[in-house]
Amino acid sequence: MEKKRSYIYALFYLSPDFENNSWVYLSYAESADDHSTIGAVVVRAKFNLKNSSLTLTSVEKLWVQEPKVTGKGHYSHRIAFGPDGKMFITSGDRQKLAPAQHFNSHLGKVLRLNDDGTVPNDNPWQNRGEMAKQFWSIGHRNMLGVDFDDEGRLWVHEMGPLHGDELNLIIAGKNYGWPIVSNGDHYSGEPIPDHHTRPDFEAPRKFWVPSIAPSGLVIYDGEMFADWKGSAIIGGLVSRAMIRVDLKKDTAVEADYDPFSDCERLDRRSGPDCRRRPTDYLAGIRSTQSFKLANRCFQPSPIFRIDVPVSDPSRPSADLPPATFAARPEALPRADGAAETVLSAACPAL
Image 1 (cartoon, rainbow, N blue to C red):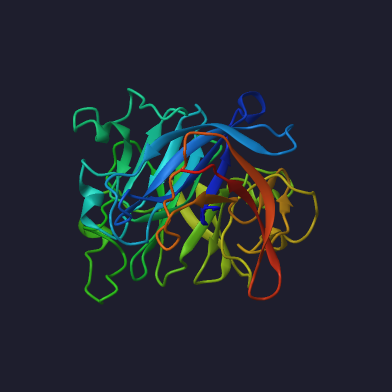
Image 2 (cartoon, rainbow, N blue to C red):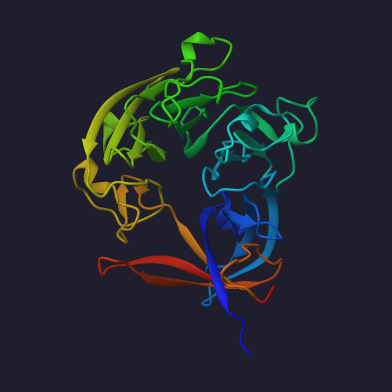
């Protein structure tokens, strides 16, 4: 009898040296063996574009968010590669708050790893335990946008609680204060001390009250729109707008706020060249069309659908076996009658 199958969705990233090494990176959420808790994970695999079957091979699990906890929010697990090839991973607080300040938990941290998942020996916290050696910064909430500017500086935005969304310049060894300080409040209405009350924590370079619910971040380095060079482009979920932020030295100043009905998340990939007004290059998360800004492209976060055979489809395991699995483009139906294209990866039996 054929086993029933379930599936998960993963974000998909190319190695900076993909043309030479064929590595791709996937981040997703997996459940524990007893399905009671969940956490993020990062794997990499070889992706041979010359193979007509689009087969992923040599799957390696590089990082597992620990501890796995209950709940389904604030995984983050966004990835960016630095100019030196190091891999930066955002690890959300999983709505547990306090662990963002703990050195024995991945929750609420920005991590810096080698591209093979090993730990560099020059990370800032070398004397706070083995796990802390992975940390680049601490005290974060839910980070869904990450990118480097042309000076090699890392910018990350994160969703605040009730308002207080942030754009942060990430500096090695800094504590960004969550959940001790925030320019937002708890959803219950209970106030949280503002950042200015604790100058010992690193304050955001820009924050939003009311919330924009930032999701997706690109720092534009193209030539087509000269005025946008070096700007941070953010998609707002609640604001349903594109927000452009000028990054000047260590400051961040909002320059444009352009409502866009389909603008929900931003990412970049290669795509067809076209010349429209800047906001026309933004695609909603469910759009299948790709738009290009000069040599940079904005479109939905690349999604990978992973089909996994399970004995109990109501409680699927999201773990990838260390074996070959196949991928194929697939159109998924939507409620509005359209379809979204994802890559579908069929895993062997677990």
